[in-house]
Image (cartoon, rainbow, N blue to C red; front, side, top):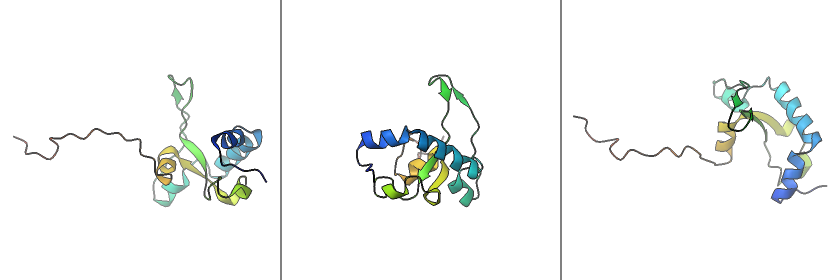
Length: 112
């Protein structure tokens, strides 16, 4: 069974045709909707927007491994371990915060 411990091993998996095919299959199964947003009563879909700076379609939905690839390599392509989520939900799931919103130090002061 392959291991997915290093970035190189993970990249090889995520670049594989087998993964790309499975990823598209899962997105289609999930109706191109974020399943986490859906559980929260929201709708988040793939809008097929184009990014001029990246010269490609904006990535809005990803296929998430519910049980991490690194710790459960045997579930790498298991449909029951995969779900479509939006980038925001995926980042939250992995504890990543890219908001970088600069706090206004006067935000809570009285307004005249």
